[in-house]
Length: 153
Image (cartoon, rainbow, N blue to C red; front, side, top):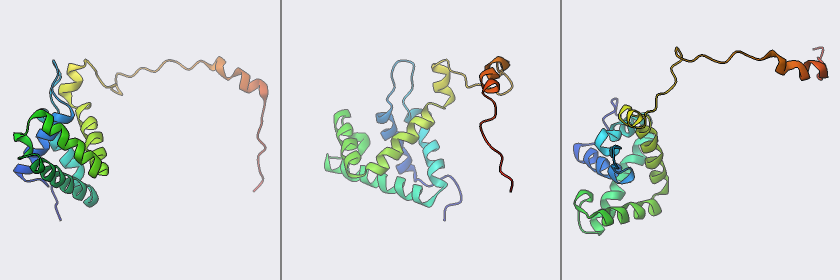
């Protein structure tokens, strides 16, 4: 059993990175998902559970097979052929593909590079200053009176 977050070979990691660059390609200031290491995020998440590891490893095999049907390894295919490959895998392995997309978005939109590019800063508990509670909002409840009856157990 794997005891580290490294469940992928170097070739599988490269494949995952290329796939992630198709799922979330670079656009303007926004980097591609594979280029900022979201593959490592997915690999670490998959390493936590045997079922996830199997899903990712089998999904990557599906991508390799679908790419071979289109004439080569995924990275060597044209952009259109890569998209066709991923559509094929989405159709043949929907559970894997949904997992891949969900985890890609989770990793991507929480990555510091992306949050900085979006000018987003997650609230920090120390910086959070809640509004004071307006007790006048309780007045209708107080006027209504008790609506439950306590039980004697």
